[in-house]
Image (cartoon, rainbow, N blue to C red; front, side):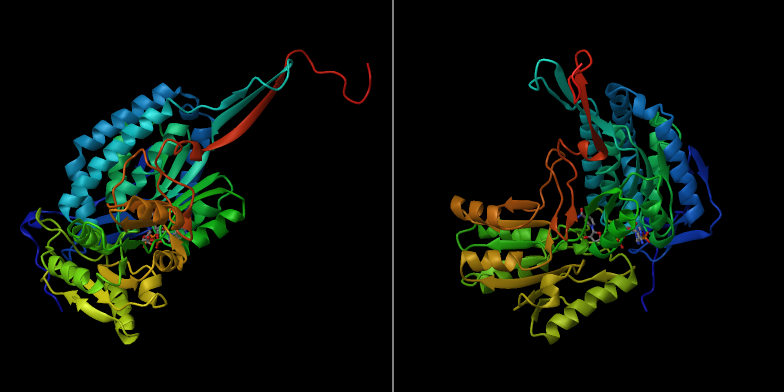
Length: 501
Ligand code: NDP
């Protein structure tokens, strides 16, 4: 058993006690506390209330009142925009504190958490701009007496449920857009990484978001999340998490026919042709597989290499991967941090074992790393993986890279598409026709060409098939949180229906 050593940065650290935010007030709720043990350090770093169904119902009632009685939905776009811009400034001002919380609770490297905070600030500013540009359509072509106007109205109360792997970034891909539209919300962060979302609650109050507009209820999915997806007073559910819980969320929401937006898992292929810039690719492959310890929906966990380059490229990736710095998440030079829980580490190990038994070879790593801290996994490469193996089809959610091979472009496309997921993909070639063919034929929400995992607030993100439903980010992101209403207007009362006058 590993002895956990408190790193220097945590020597004087006292576990932080958080409260939930319901109707503008901070509350412990009636339940017990959830203790979060830092995955990278093995010590308790946060305690949040274990919210109950009753807490979720109080939060939903508050959000309902805040929506039905305003002022938030009735403000001008400019007023909402100004508040979101202020929130962005306050997030930027507290970025170090938020990044620290995400790091100690999730085990991700601090340098990465800081970069995610920078991205989140940009998203809040982008959503603030969209708040002023939400508009419908008008039809002046329906005849002399008729004018058609299509309105975009805030959909109402939105339940927002987020996972643990990008705690602050993912809530930032949802909440500012829902707020920009004029919605009110109940947010449930992961029970393992709720800290930064609760600090966001403080920030939003300071920025001027009225009571009840953003409620944050901590607790487990079956208790709190389930109430948030079934309650009749909720109009929409925006969920990011696993495909299994996404499916359950959709079934729960179906009882009252709520609108559902789902960002789910991925098993993302990178298809590599012999004419690619292989130096650039090898670097991107290592980053794509091991970023966030592979606990990333977008992980480039499935390489599909042309047979003629497969051995050489795999060896080069293994050489580079050996140099990746795995270690204390609080060390600013760390590139790969800890695995979220000991149970998850076991699950990743089981995937490696089953692939080995099925005939794959471990070209690098393959097991846990004992760093005398929390739980860590060695960057791992499996070669000789066949398309029907579990490790090639299922989301491992760890630092495990599977290498498959192809001979023809058609075969590469077939392998890439022969799974249930369709979140993202990459293609590497200097040939424009090759890149475009792959870009159009691979069924994924994002296809990167000669790059990987780049993103921007302007670019929509989401998945095909069982990777999700709907898109986040981009200029239509606010519209997702609206209803469409048609106003059909006549100049003077229309006459001449059935009966002549
Ligand atoms: P889970 O699906 O286990 O959990 C996601 C959220 O759903 C958590 O807040 C969880 O609560 C909650 N939840 C669990 N059960 C229920 C329920 N019955 N009703 C309502 N909510 C529930 O995912 P993880 O947290 O393990 O996150 C990893 C997954 O997220 C991966 O599959 C990954 O691919 C996906 N993901 C997708 C992204 C995308 O944009 N496509 C981005 C990032 C991650 P709790 O755990 O607190 O009990």
